[in-house]
Amino acid sequence: MELTRKNRLIKAIILGAFTVLMLTLTIVVTVLLVRKHLKNKNNPKNETVVQKSDKKTETVKPDKSVNLKHYSNFIVIAKKIEELYKTSDDAAVTRYLESFGFTRSYIVSMTLLFTRDDVFLKISHPITKVINRVDCETIKNLKHPNIIETYQYYKFTANNSVTKTQYPVEITLSEKLNQFTWKGGDHAHIKMVMKDVLEGLAYLQTKRIIHNGILPVNLMQKWNGARNAIKIIDFVVSVILPEGETIIRLWKTRPSWWAAPELVINK
Image 1 (cartoon, rainbow, N blue to C red):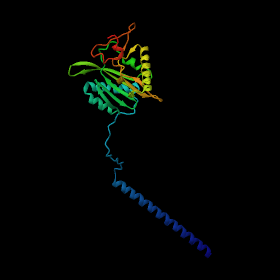
Image 2: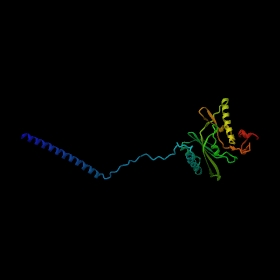
Image 3: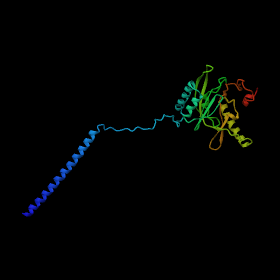
Image 4: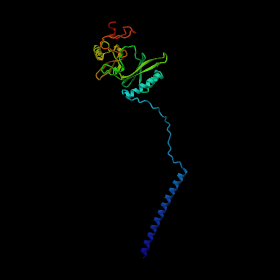
């Protein structure tokens, strides 16, 4: 009888302890919920704060890695140059091309030459007095290891604000070459140079093209993996010989000592 009474007492104690524990847990949860509610009430604008950056927005610059050998990329730059020619000066054109990573090499005889990576970009004013002058499309189609390779070209007409006249402008994109290095007295070098030049001229003759300017300044070189190959450049006074003719003459504005060898004959 007494044992039964003890068991009941133990059960009552356990039940009481469990009840107290549950009440305590309930009170704690209730207090936490009340605190959260009061916190939200005191801060009704529960918005995400966007931190302002002190970094200024950079101006989008042209992509210097764009492949200009593709016509779609080249024509964008060419048309911008045309726009600048009509509204600005050479300095503006230079700044624009420098933004694309070009470096201006020189300005001579109304010609601008820029270099970048493996290409030349030349802006020139062609001599319109040359009869049967070789056009840009023909030059672009020339493919020979001793002739400069032209990738793209663009032509437009600009206005001279001083004389109120118009003049043609040509933009050509070609392979980048190195300055021709002359080794005077080196017969092996002379032989190599003459061989390259003559092979280039022989190829031009198959196209009925007379270069009209085979001078040291119109020769450049490029490493072909084994040696520096000589390349003929500058077709500014080059002409296409009409069918049935073997001699062609240019206008006489310079002394014969300036002319190329093929022009000195029969003078």
